[in-house]
Image (tube, rainbow, N blue to C red):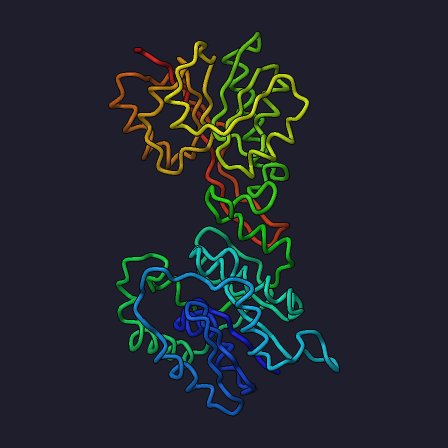
Amino acid sequence: MIDIVVVLRAEDAVLDFLSVLTDDRGGEIRVILGDRAEMLSLAAGTDPAGRPALLAPHVRPVTDGIVPPGPEVLAELLLRAGAGRGGQESQGEETVRVWTHSPADNRRSHGRLGRDTAVACEEIRYGPAGLRHAVGFSPYLQFLSDLDRPLTRRHVAAKLDFVNRHCAELLTEPDPEYLVQTPRIPATERFFDADPAQRERLYALLASLDDEAASVADPWEFGSSPYEEQRLDTTAAWVRDRCGTSGGTLVEVGACEGALTRRLAAAGFSVRATEPNPVFRTRLAAALAGSGTVTVDGADLAGLAKEDGPARATAHLLIEMLYYGQDLALLDGLGTDQVFLALEPEALASRVRPWLERSAVWRAEEEIVLVPPRVETVCAGRAYLSKRGSVGLLLRRTAG
């Protein structure tokens, strides 16, 4: 048996995979360092207790440009690390077993390496049967793990000693991706299996609005989540009750794949659905193809604020999309006298209320709880998380 541990940086092998390094069976272990595209060999018979020290010389300061090498390079390294052995069962035993980061690790480079390692394992037929992901750093998700390994006091002491001796700079590292703090030094190392669909969905779930989020259809599970269904239904009903349906034209900003758009169209509205992400926009257009009341384009909030069209919309909808640092002053340029805005309560309090108190253009006409908080499973039950609720705010223009 050869255990192959694939990590972004050398310290990760000790922080998340110490139980693998110190397995009492004493078999061969190969460690692949993603940031260097290098492999280290810990031969069979090496004292398990001394293996972390062999990684110490490879811990280095954080520099710019630390990125995973990609599936193709990882596949080559895995083949070399596996010494030509197969990952499928041979005479009842796996000859190669691979351990790596979670695709949903909140540190995006670690998550990308975990996803890319799984892709590489598929290419060379090392998985998924012989592949396990560490839960790793996951402040937002709770995982249903398949293997939990509580560390002994001796192993915890060894892990802490490694951190204090060899990772001192990382204890004060300003980049949160590489900062080492208590939640990133687990006393119980937890691992889970994931099929390709789960892996891609987990990876997309933690993404923002780039192409990574769009790597799977419906990454936030609007079509299968009871919470999201209630939120969308309530939002559509709120807009319908306040605007009526007689000839109203709505501009939905950041329509994603059209989960809310379909509801608004069904309520009788003419909708201009805007979506800057080209992958989401393609799916949006396909989902609404044939609808005579919906148009689709790629305008973002900044672009809409600069438009000088002849007609003013009944309302602009900014539903669960002001999480990405947009300048709220852009709302002043929108071609409408009312804006339906929805955010989780904390974001509403920290971002919108202070701006609204200073605004001479907008006032809050109504506030409504669209959906209360709820704890819900995601990714076919592989994990669960707390969804924080959504509060709607109807803004009315007071000037200009």
